[in-house]
Amino acid sequence: MDKNDLISRNALLKNGTRIVGNIRLPDGRTIRVEGISVPEIEYAPAVDPEEMWPKGKWIKHDDYTECSVCEYWYDSPEDETADYRPNYCPNCGAYMREDQG
Figure 1 (cartoon, rainbow, N blue to C red):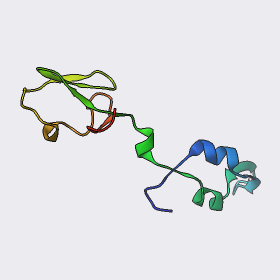
Figure 2: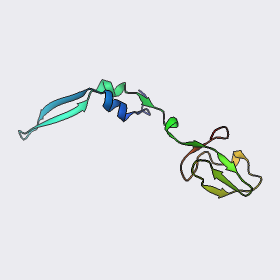
Figure 3: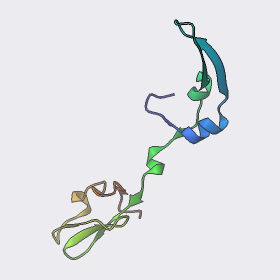
Figure 4: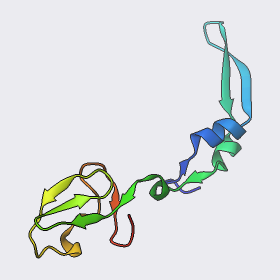
């Protein structure tokens, strides 16, 4: 598993084997602990963050450009091209591409 993997908490909790045991503390008390086995965490399904992020596109109007997801807009010159637009909406964080939305 790569150190940058994100795992699905819901899938892990749904499919993971619960380990239950007792631990004796130095002061003599015993506490009950629960957890999930390490191998199950290692092989938990990974999540692609790109799939979770909203996707949109910039909509160019005469004197402003608008986010197709949240309708955030900013003043833009008439000659602005896609090369000068941000890749992400600063308001909602949507990933912007010209061929989607």
